[in-house]
Amino acid sequence: MREETKAREDIARWAKSMFDRGLTGGSSGNISVRLSNGTLLVSPTGSSMGFLDPAKISLLDENGVHMSGDAPTKEMPLHQAFYETRKSAGAVVHLHSCHSVALSVLPDVDEDNVLPPITAYGVMKLGKVKLLPFFMPGDPAMGDAVRGLLGKRAAVLLANHGPVVAGKDLNAAVYAMEELEETAKLTLMCKGMSPNLLNTAQVNGLVDKFNIDWD
Image 1 (cartoon, rainbow, N blue to C red):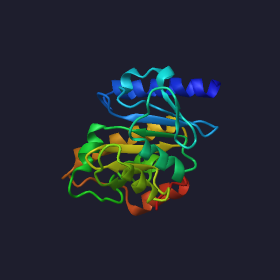
Image 2: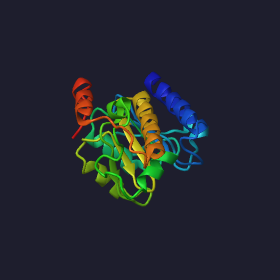
Image 3: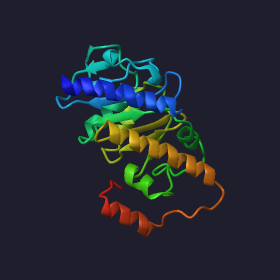
Image 4: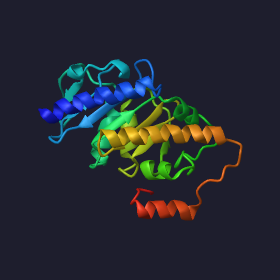
């Protein structure tokens, strides 16, 4: 119970932090954490990330069956797909962060790697970020699209919707999400300016040194 109690408190704390910093607004965004027994804690549907009640966070069994708390987010297909395909995933964060969404609608982005290698930490914390097409919110096809990546990507960007990141734990998932949004912001700031990106040798050096998924 101590693990679950702490995870509930951490979800509410991180959600409020991201809400307060404008990374997601209104009732958008959702978080899940996988506990050591395989159960999931998930932010409830229709809830604001800035005002989560730890006691009302949804608890699902390892098969995704709702056990207690408020009804879970309708974006569960996304979360479950990451947990199924990335066994190392301990948490998943999905936001509607402004710069990431803006990047997702541009016509000339690389769908296989939507973030250019602007900084070392963008490469290190995210690997390649796949741009997925638009889906209706809650559509199970979102989960199928993630499963189609065969666990090779820790982060995706849903077109006209927002980013989704899986991490080994909640801290790692949040840090990676923040890096994604900042890299998207830098990309937009530098658009049309011919920035000096990391070259192939520099990227490969980071991939090798820090054992980054780069497929």
